[in-house]
Image 1 (cartoon, rainbow, N blue to C red):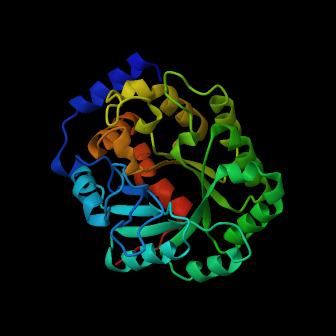
Image 2 (tube, rainbow, N blue to C red):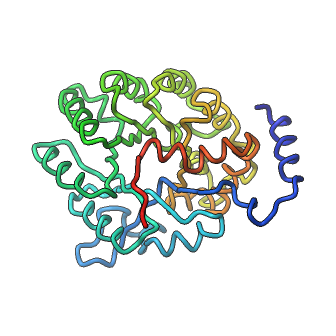
Length: 307
């Protein structure tokens, strides 16, 4: 979509009268990328590091205070800690916090991988794990990666992948080799600043999008922009070089909402992050919004509804 066309569509949408029941972006909104942690624990946390703005207690109530005004009250948490027992920490948190409908854990490959996966897979909140996609580029780990991916598929779990655009061809290869594994690429596939896209990103996205078992999480959008913290552009048109290409390649059925909060604060506040994707997907129509804000996520993560 060209900038002028997008602005015309957005203006037309904004001019439409909204009833209170139709004011939300979709009938349900699920944020599939949040991080929760507590540095005040006796054991502390391995991430984020001390001395950063992220080094503070971040729990569901903190997220809900920001997300609820946008109509979002459910989340899939993504674990960044490499500590095995931090997977249990989130699962214990989910027992008390009904806003957590799914959890993507962190389990490193190694001799205990299969046992750990079987352990956590018994909990219905546990929906998959996240690896760095750079792992797929390590030839010495190829057999372990393939075995781990197949084990995930056997358990009906998914795989989140986060890493550089240069790893996307390896993601496409894995998707072909384990075609019954649902794969969700994190953070747009690392395109870089919309005004200076990494040259390998567009062709790599085109190739990986051809794999029907791969979805794309539209997360970390504002973090692609270099600049002072919290100062990323608030104009949706600025991000069209990224958003348009993802829409063209993945279509309405495999794009998923994720905020990357609280890391997203590096680029802008939650309302800004949400507003950008709301404007873009609203311009695509109500059916696209329903799919983007929750239906596509449900297909990828297959969470069980909580009472």
